[in-house]
Amino acid sequence: MSPSVIRDSAGTERDDMIDSKEASAALADIDDIVQRVKQSQLYELASYAAVWWGVLVLAGNLVTWLWPVYAVYAWVAVDVLGVGGLVALRLLNPPHHPRGAAFDIRLLLVFVLFFAFGYLCTNVIGHFGPRQLGAFWPLYFMLFYTLAGLWFGYAFVAIGLGISALTLIGFVFIGEAFPLWMAFVNGGGLILGGLWMRRI
Image (cartoon, rainbow, N blue to C red):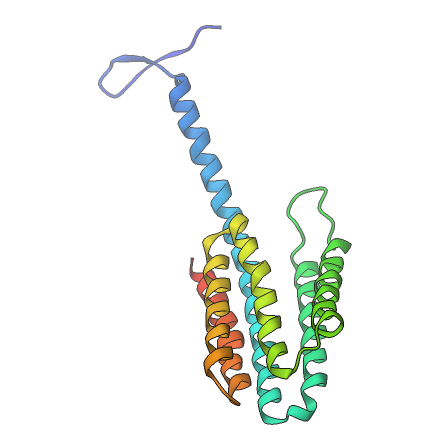
């Protein structure tokens, strides 16, 4: 089948077929657009999750600072509400491919394993006090946040490393006001990070 011949505005004959370089460039452009759309969707969902956790963590740290006797109950509530919010977010935003299930049980298992390993480290292997717990959990959470950034984008890495550094600074240099510091560093950092991700 021979290519059709058309005339351009100057009346010159030309083939309407594109060469392999043009085709490759067009496909690369399409692939780039698809990747940007996927990343923007991921960042949008991650931003909702970060803001949600940020609000909860801010509240948990404020309770720990103002009413330390209720800290244990506050953090159980933070964890339950946090995981519940992420599950709801996933159910309300299912994957956009035909075989994607509305809810993947692996998401719930990730959180079970995450908290089980954290509990093992802080209460079985070690016996952390309130100050150590206040530093460990944000650092532990930010480790996975930063690792996720190696696959999903620099915003995760920046947020994870930033909150980790500020947590360590507070642990070393801030005294009794450490929970208040963490309310703004961890909770406020997640909220600001989530809002920033929506603008990328």
